[in-house]
Amino acid sequence: MPSLPRIGARWRWLRRWRARHLDVDRHAVVEHVCEAGALAPRYVFMTVMSCGIATLGLLLGSAAVIIGAMLISPLMGPIVSMGMSLATFDFRALRSALKAIGVGVAVSLLTAMAIVLVSPLREPTEEILARTEPTLFDLLVAVFSGLAGAYATITRKGETIVGVAIATALMPPLAVVGFGTAIGNGTIAGGAAFLFMTNLLAIALSVTIMARWYGFGATDSPKQTAWQAALIVGTFVLLSIPLGLALREIAARGAVERTVRTTLDTAAREIGGRVTTLRVDRDDRTLLVDAVLMTPTYRPQLAGELERTLESAIGQPVVVKLSEVLTADVDAQAREQASASLAQLRDSVQRLQSAAHADAETRTAGERALAELRERAIGHFGRFEVLQGGGEATWQLRPEAGLDLHASRQLEIALHDGGARPRVRIVPALQPLPLIGFGDDSATLDDDATGSVQDIAWALERWQLETVEVTGYAGGDQALATARAEAVATALREAGIDVAAVAAADRDEARSLIAREGSAAIRAARVQAVTN
Image (cartoon, rainbow, N blue to C red; front, side, top):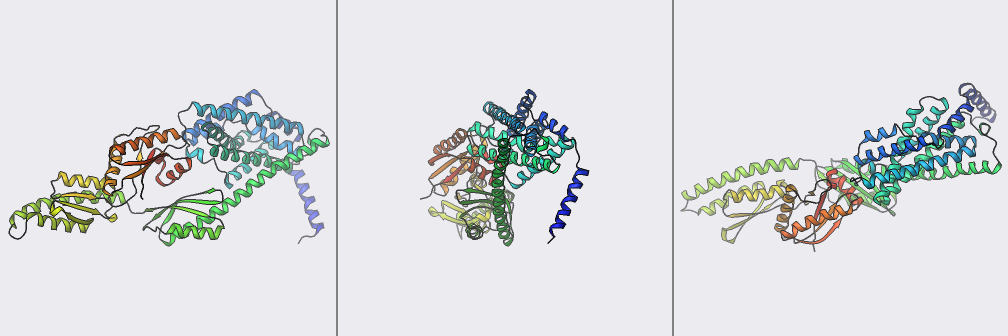
């Protein structure tokens, strides 16, 4: 351990080094900072322009437009002035900076809310959702932006470019707060406001630290009274408290997410799969884990095993929602098998009909046709049963056949069109019902959506399921989600299906569906069977 004299010598050397290498015109820097952070018409105008462009970029989901808004943002001036006033104990500069920041925040919120209220785009984009929860990387961006901003201001080099970095950490979250407020979504507005405040405090305190490193202090400001100095010190402490709490929360969340990620990756490797999508949320004290697992084989008990493992490692209740996706190209297999099977079946029926007449003494044509058809069906797809003395047959498809509802229904239609006898009734393999897609801001069933509803109604009748529930998805637009669900429910009722309930998904359900099905799933409706 170094002795006290050695520590003192190192400290004196450091102070001499700073005096030689970090010498700047501090009076000119302070004047420049105060001038740049003052509240002026140009500052208000550029804030409105920057927030307007950022809001449009967020609604369109365009990162390029958002970056364009950063090029004209004036937020660097008052924030650097705030951090410098804390370093120099300048009460008047602190008050002026806080006033400018407050006006900028108010103007930005009003601008973002006005644009969202007149815009037809109300669904949260990925750019918006990405700014509703602060992470450690967001905090690091703010810290580095603050240090770079203070360095550029003190050395008077590259201030415009560094201002873009500071605006990147502040203007988009502020625009998201206005978006969440305009659509009445407190979760989005609150999460973005927390991110904005965390970044603002991190930047201001980073500027203070850099200014103190360059030797700025109380001698660089007008003489303050004791209570003004105490107020500035208290402000510094108060700013540090929420930043420290935010850092602790972010660190704890990061540790939990690393544990979840490691646990799921380990489990996936053991079965030869991989985790493609992972989201960790909290509901009171319960940890909600939503993941998509690419796996060569289904493991329905894996979710329960992961819940027990995570609860033991984290020490709190955990709910795991695991969506397992087979790595094989099921759709391609289904199309190939359906095409080949249709050709084989039609050819078989023709051959069987010809052979039946030649072998009428040993067995009837229908018996030979049924025997041959049963062998092919069992070998390729599933169980084949003859009903009503040979007048009708039921074909129970297996999951290994790889046929979805649409392909199964088309197979039955093709058999009937081909004149197959006896009449074959296809029963598709049990599988999740497909999503019913809609156009942007539309609640009208187009041809594809109508075909999906017909496939679902046909499958429910074959499975002898009479009652369903319909849920509509439209992001934050509850009215549009309800209209979509009602459109599907009406079509199902016309097809003879009993619809027990119609609901609109909230934002969390919509985000979970997007994680599993892709971004197009937010413009859809889902049908779920109700079993007793």
